[in-house]
Structures are given as structure tokens and as C-alpha cells.
Image 1 (cartoon, rainbow, N blue to C red):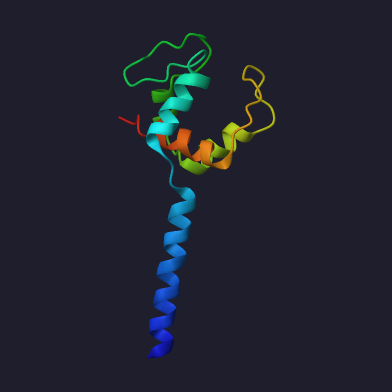
Image 2 (image 1 turned 135 degrees about the vertical axis):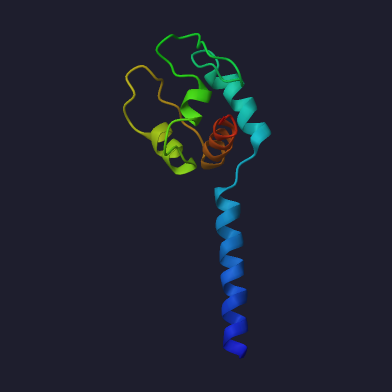
Length: 106
């Protein structure tokens, strides 16, 4: 019985640690989007036209089928995006901006 309780406790702690690593700050993500991304992308809810016509709006990105935090992190850290500058974001900034983008889903 003691092993079961320890296993359950350890599992709960592991889940909490994973959630803490994958969570992002919506407000910080919005701020980052406005400061860094808005010169090319439409970053606000309801904004459909990006300043750079070839850049998708964040709402479009959020509503891409299968879009997840992991997919956004991969895309944002991929080495080659011909039209996008090479952004150097911390892992927390990646989580923050990903949470913000996904908050724009319809």
C-alpha cells in the first residue's frame, strides 16, 4: 500500500512539473507579440491584414488544423524562414508567445 501511495504522489509531482514547463504567460506573450512580431504580423484578435502581406495573422496561425504549442515552438525555432528574421527567444518566451497565439483560436 505504501508503494502505491508513493507512486501516486510521485506521478502527481511529475505531472505538476511538466505542466509548469509547458505553461506560458498570456500577458507576456501578448507583450512580446506586440513588441517583436507586430511589425510583420497582425497579432491582435480580429486583425486580419498583416503589415507584411505575406505574413499570416496570428489568428490564422492559431486556427491552423493541428496547431499546438509544440508545433509553434518548432516552427519558431526552425533554422530557415526566408521571410522571417532569425528570432532568438528563450524557452519561456516561446511558451509565452505560443500561449498567446493559441488564445486567438476561434
